[in-house]
Length: 218
Image (cartoon, one colour):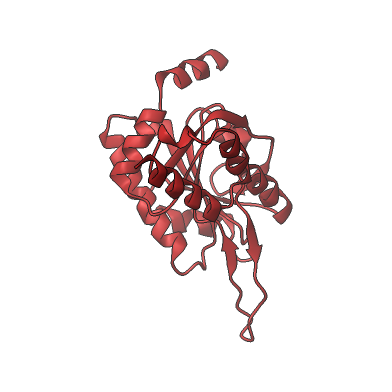
């Protein structure tokens, strides 16, 4: 059973393109036992470096925007025909399940970051994500700043060549990335997303210890 869970976790991470996890897991081959299935938590959390994106609410979405609560981050684009809307729908279900387990909605946030800034503007993104949940956030930025953040999380993306009809697609990760209230890369969630299962796993990861650390920093 353990071997199956480990194999499933490795496959999910490989699909997500997380270089950080691949390096860590090679040094800790049995660590996936703690959080089987879709959520993989990193015992050694990685502090994120500064980045600057834009949103439609405050104008700037940066590292400080990830502090004070747990962040579920997903990269995609508004013209995405399937993965993006499906994931946003799944995350709305995950949010409901987490809140139902007694975790305050103010302690979590869900952020959709477009890696197609040429077509997706902040105001449009915000309206798009709020269709799935009124509290969801949307952001984007320059290719340079998007690359800065996606490389830190191991979430590669690539703009594909235009077709004859001047339409193009963007290849991106299908995973959701977890950042803790201290702005540290804490884990990764790979599809398929079973809302109740993810909520249970996150509830185990969420701890009062993180809230105490956060309170001391305020």
